[in-house]
Image 1 (cartoon, one colour):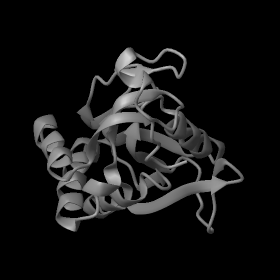
Image 2: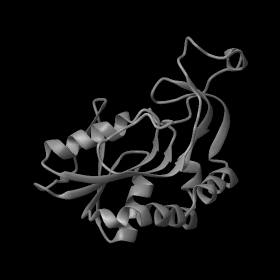
Image 3: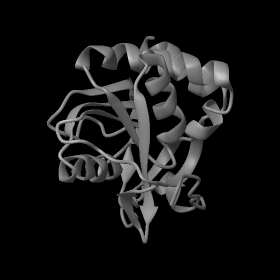
Image 4: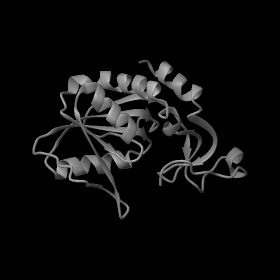
Length: 188
């Protein structure tokens, strides 16, 4: 799947929003990827999962790990298409943790799959969990990299879409956003 094809899916499903948004990182933006809108139709999940799986297949993983909520649907689909085990981390008292009896074995080859990366905080937190449990991160797959190339995880990083999206500190908003009420449509 090309970037243009993936971007077209986001536009057709209304998952690429325009306006004034507060991102999970606290930054403000004119654009927001509401991946849940694109991922509500299983044929679209399958197509996007196929695109990500193709870029991750050669990394030789045995397990896909996704941070909840954003990575759950696409992570499970990537695991299904690659025939791998799927597990997830979720918030507990504000931090991501491995729960529900999931285990990571020593040297287990893990792919981390997430929906959107801006500053990479949730992915970094997920990588740390893998390493604390002795796992071996083989790569990261994301639907949308909106970091403008600013994130580096030290393993192969495979986004379907790389967007150059302007982000702003809350006290440095451009004039066109100052008078527009900001909304926070993403996960908390």
